[in-house]
Amino acid sequence: MRRIAAALLLLAGMALVCAGCGFKNLDKRFFVMAMGVDWTGKPDNPYLVTLRLAIPAAKIGERLAESQVERVESPSIAEAVRSLKPHVDKELDFGQCRVFLFGDRLVKHSMEEPLNWMGRRRDIQLISYAAAAEPSAAKLLEADPTTERIAGNAFFLTFGKEGTVSPYTVTE
Image 1 (cartoon, one colour):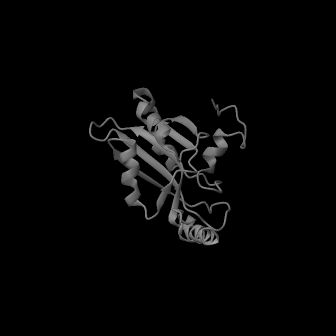
Image 2 (cartoon, rainbow, N blue to C red):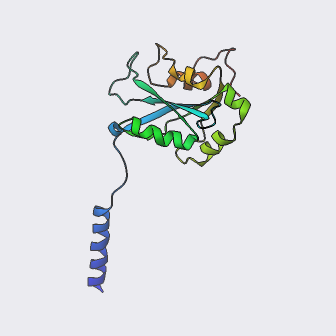
Image 3 (tube, rainbow, N blue to C red):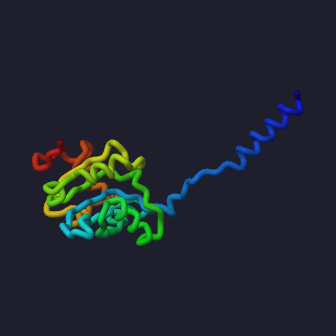
């Protein structure tokens, strides 16, 4: 009986040592801070998907927020995200993405596919902000506020209750 218990304990110990996880280090990730989807109206590539990616940095301060904007036209949003992965040298992480901007033309056309895509992604939080962007989501994501300390933080402060409360910004 003791041999069986010792063997099971040894096997359990080996399983703990051999087990690994799929965790990637922070320096091997691009954090998607905001995503924009626009309607192009083209029959073969109707969606323009724009991602605002934060580049992890050791220091945080004014004008130290490094980010890059990537965009691609595609027949679907899922295919656009898949085709953006080879354009960057790191894994895309949507876990920090809290702002989704939808272009004015897309809102008027149909929101079915963007909302369906968001609902199927397990790494998109249920606390995200969704907004209609005018004239387009790509134009808003390209903006680079001079006072932004963390990439994409201007969007979070605009829509959330943490930033300045203004009568010109209406959160619904």
